[in-house]
Amino acid sequence: MKITYYDSPTTNYIGDYNVCYTIHPFLLLSDIIQFGVDNSWARLILEDIDTWSPEKIVACFKECYKDHPVAMEMVKDYYEVSTLVKKNTQNKHNNPRKVIGINAFASLHKKFKEDLKTFARDIIVGNELAERMEFRTDGAFVMKPIDFRQKDNKEDALISEISTTITNRDYMLLFDKNVEEIFPFATFGVLETNGFDFIRIPLWDFPYLNSLDYNQMKYTRNDLQPAMAPFKIKLQEFWDEIVTIQFIDKNIEQLKHLCQSKLHPFVQPIQQAINESLYISQIRNKSENNNKLTMCLGITSVHKLIQYYEKVETVLPYVASEIKQQVSRYMDLKATQMFVYFKISNNEANESVSDTIL
Image 1 (cartoon, helix red, strand yellow):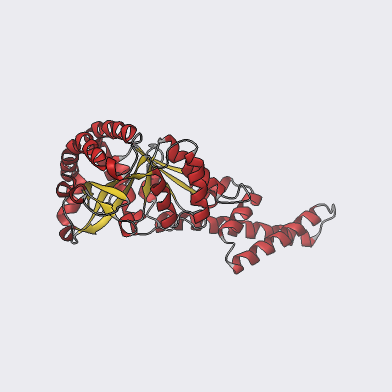
Image 2: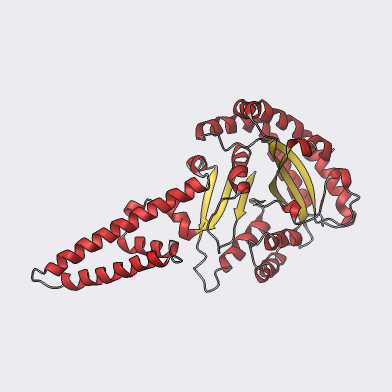
């Protein structure tokens, strides 16, 4: 099970409660979770700043701090000093201004480098990425830098990324927003609902796992993989079959039957494995609140899936239209598609997974 997530190119990766709390369970259950992220800040995390040239450091500094007037004054000073250094370097005679310029140049260059390192650390800490970053070496957490500035229209890269993901089905799409707040849904227990945009299939419940460090998460991941392995095979079979079915009213019962026959037998056994896992059970036992995460599978049409990106403000309306045009060249926009998300809720106020999926 591979999962991918895209955010708007107009914003930095700013963690909210969904992103901070929900990536941990996905790291435990999925083979790979991939984040499509803006190259302007992703390279701060993925590359060694100490190996960068002065020119690259200044260029990245300008990108990261372009909205900060004081920082831009530093860049202006940097160019003035660097111009002075280059000018006086061409002078063969000893020149006091040359020495002063070189010293000022080195000082500003060092300042830029330290500021970028601080910025990178703030991103990791502020978004609770520390433990997740360790999974990069395991291949479980992939950050895919996307250069949103490579074309005149910075949205072109996002159009290409989302269109490709929807059509090739290598990755299942992840939403970090609670789509139930935006779109009407129907669980298997209430399919008589008049008009709905997707079918919600609750799978497994988790407590907040952000207190676990990398070693604890890796242990839990390895512990859960045997239980997840047969489910992943059936999930792919389910996906291959439903993509040939249109998401229209007359086919809902057929989709329901497929889900019950292929996925439902695995839900409770995996929930039991999750509950009995060492560190998860410890968190449940000492937790002082009733908050929980419910991993949900969403079943909808390709057309509606693209609409979700527009509604959660990942893409603008004209971008959503362009994605639909590109995707329609390869598949039926009414074809059934899957996505995943986490519902954050209070234990006492919500039904159990078994109650809604039966």
